[in-house]
Image (cartoon, rainbow, N blue to C red; front, side, top):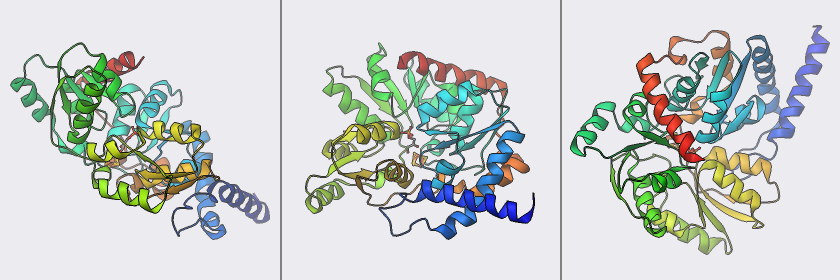
Length: 346
Ligand code: 13P
Ligand code: SF4
């Protein structure tokens, strides 16, 4: 390619990105400028070209940075939608912009594919809060009680569990299981939310839980909800079920990242208080320029470890830390709990 031709391609790519990213981050002082897009363009061009050359697909969680979600992802969504998508991928390689447990889930569901996570061992305070040995101890203490594990858990924990759940189907599956007692790991706050929701539905169960929490969602407080309602009359408050039950009780909608997107899309309200991670706020701002999103902070530093630079690097020369490998017996065990989730979600 001649230099002039290459410059034109880069400028066109920068314009494409500017069009996509212009409306992102209206809730913050930091805006995408032409210069930001010019700097991102060589990477998005190269990554999109590498996808074709290496027969790769990029899956991104909604909490990752907008230049990945908008600029290079072939699909982005919540944990459930990403799992379904990963299961049916035909390409040779899955580049998973997300956290470690999500990339592991992709590998479990489609083990013949190479799964690469640009961020390397990007943790999650929930997934890192419990081990398979601790799940075994819970099972021994409560023989015969089925174990539900939140998808935010390691492959080993999934392999010890009977059924996996995500934020989008947790209440439905907890209700649908015939048992009156359930072990739910590792999110203590979500366990409390299950308890409350099942009582509300008239199908109460005893929920035995562990002690994990999300370091983003456990920071939101009832005081914040009340303060936002006082400051913005008519505001619609939205939160994730990883929040404290006291916070959920004060909100107008509680749901997964996909549930929140659908709720906003279907609503005729104009102003929303978002008690969730900033990446989702970015997505909503891009999708709904007519709506205002108030976000009282909340950033997942693990999700933000995925960048254009390390995605490019991981696609050209991945380090062992960026490639998901799992023992076959763990894949088999974890897959059972995930497949059970797909069956029960119907
Ligand atoms: P979702 O399944 O709702 O996308 O949630 C994943 C997550 O990590 C929330 O903190
Ligand atoms: Fe884990 Fe919380 Fe980050 Fe989600 S937002 S990946 S639950 S630490």
